[in-house]
Image 1 (spheres, rainbow, N blue to C red):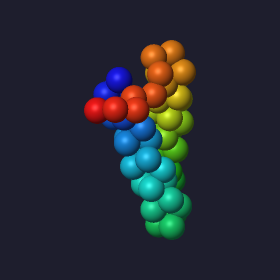
Image 2 (image 1 turned 90 degrees about the vertical axis):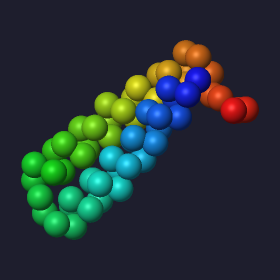
Image 3 (image 1 turned 180 degrees about the horizontal axis):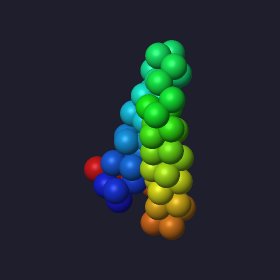
Length: 57
């Protein structure tokens, strides 16, 4: 259950990082930030679908 939270936090941080890299026009940074956002976002989504979203800690 905690894995969903960790994956979602990493995906959110990668989204903020990708916006920052777009502002700086850093092509390699954009590539890694968007790639990690897509990968960790997909992992978070699929883990939440498979195991459920943690409602209580």
